[in-house]
Image 1 (spheres, helix red, strand yellow):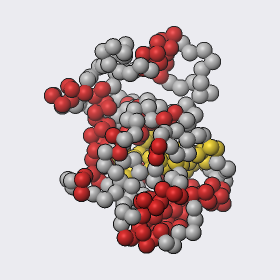
Image 2 (tube, one colour; image 1 turned 180 degrees about the vertical axis):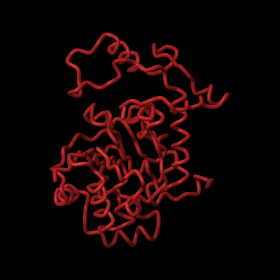
Image 3 (cartoon, helix red, strand yellow; image 1 turned 90 degrees about the vertical axis):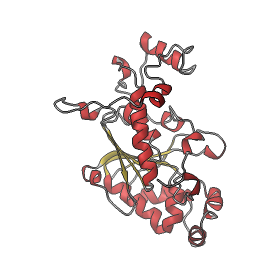
Image 4 (cartoon, helix red, strand yellow; image 1 turned 135 degrees about the vertical axis):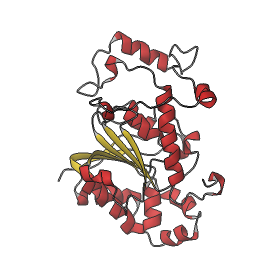
Length: 287
């Protein structure tokens, strides 16, 4: 396995990325409709170590989530993270299922209690039980993942509903694409696709997303602003040369997506802080 310290993240494939961003309850996901992922097929492009991928599969209850990344080392770490999350998972609650309209007009008492305890952290003083503390994995290894053979519907629940693949997805289809997706997620990757593939590369990405989405499917995009390209292109001479020829800008992405067949953007906000404060936009495939 390559030493992460020696890897230049020319594809945005940062190692240790989630040591800088919130590691649980990602604020970008909090902006999205609660029912967006429930029971759906989801593709997470540029999944890194799989933190968001696993959150969608476990907490947001997607039917199937495919995480794809160009960096095989990160994909290996994503599989490891999946098992870590499974090891810490507590027993399911009956009211974990999202409501039909994405919210409840009157939350149940049990849900109120859980939200209250979760809001102050997770530990011995928080009121939220630690079913399998992280120290246990370091000492004894992760919990085994049960076999789903003969258990109808088990493959649609975490951790069996998560798969990770190493691929340059923009240029190389993966087997899962054949069934198409209800949601495609692209967090913090558009800049790197743009710098590596040029204007045609980002257009190819948008067309690929359109092709693999079901009619009415949702594309969630976190575009990185143009002024952040300057630092990224200095990482590698090839990126610097490619940047000289870019005519498209992130502000053009909404228009380009509408030309392809998406509706206008729904701007959900800009969570995060500092360099991670970026917009999250939602596009619907309309034709």
